[in-house]
Image (tube, rainbow, N blue to C red; front, side, top):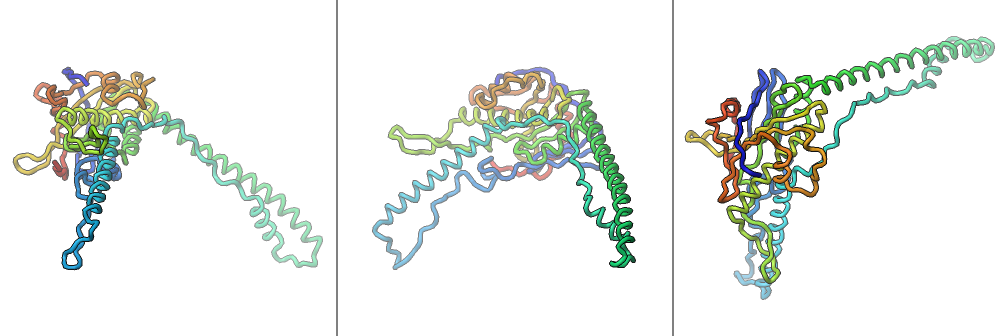
Length: 374
């Protein structure tokens, strides 16, 4: 992604609060909250920030026995254990990089108008049985004529009852469908409460934590929390000239490039899902935040890593399964603000002195419990 520098406007809906925590970002709108969480522990999302640490020793402890003497094949066993540990770490690193760089490839089928499920069918046999039981009450078994007449009367009243229940069933079904149609039209017309609510629910379990914070006509304002540079592993699996597995240390330039792609992948995932679940939106403005350690008082803080605008029509025809997140970002984003350090290809936080709206947004973010894990 190339460096661009243009003014960037961003509107947050009145009454919306933005909070950033170790689980991501979330918004509060009045008494209702849309909680957003970091995804459920996928392996290797960041160094030491998940259930698997990239560089944790996996070789196990040495057992003692027999006065400290080791079996004759101890050296061979230890080499085998070390090789197995290296393969296991290589797989963890491979999965971590794959997850970080390929989030944008997830597909989101566009939503369609909801259809109310039909209510349960009328149990005709049960209705007839109920009416017969009521009609035959008090009529002896030997009173055949009276019982025959009672059954005929019960059948007629049961039929009338079935028709009434079926009419009520159809009415309830139509009412439910009308409510869904009204909701669907509200979503298509971009009524703020509906759109923000739908997006809040859609983002609830995202691996790329995000929140919708405002709506201006058919353009939505989004905030996403993307990985910082420390989420990128320091090593990657590679082969030596002899064809042996090794864990190669990444150069600063390689690590910076991976970080840029990972941030773009998180951003694109968020925008893809936004356009999929909110069909009336034509554009989205997104601010990407990153955890930036602590200030002089030990309080966690965040920085604006990039900002961009996306138009729905630019997403048509994108080869998501073939093209990298960085190349797609260049193609589909406009009004992009980012700062790439050319020497290392690393994204740098934006200088907001010339971006008052972004500075105002950052001032509204309530940082809650972010933990630095460098």
